[in-house]
Amino acid sequence: MNILNLHTLTEKKKENLITALWVGSVFIILALVYYINLSTNLWDGLVNFFTSLTLAPLPSTGISLPAPLNPAGYVNLYTAAFQFCLGIGVLEMVILALRVGMHSPISRKAETIENIVFWLGTSFLTVTYLERITLATEWFVFWAGIIFIFGLALLARAIVVLATRVTTFSLFSRSTKDP
Image (cartoon, rainbow, N blue to C red; front, top):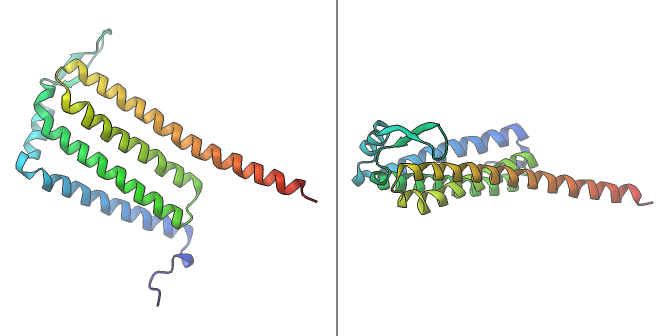
């Protein structure tokens, strides 16, 4: 006996199911990251981080933006951010597998691929760059990297959508030429 027959679910119900799984999993990831970092007093580190924000000059401009007073003092917080980003990236890969299995629309699959690129890219930047940061001016280079990763994520989404449309168009044009 099949308790949950996915073939009988409407597209909207399938998407709602995936969304519910995603939201629940995000809460679990948050709880796990917090639990893993209990010994580092993550909450106090987060409060100290936000209270230490000050306006720092953006190099080669007349603009000042928020940056931590001592960016090197928050390695434990950066480690927790890495764990969270990596967890969300892995979750997005699971969601993509569900979307493929449930035959979700290509736009939803492309969105999930965009999310995978963003979260895994952000986790990479966090672990390789933030954990080695020492100056407030380097803080802005990290955020430039995040903007770069966001651009890559949007490109990944566009490539998936474009590739699907090109494939669909070529299949359609072949079928119309057949006698």
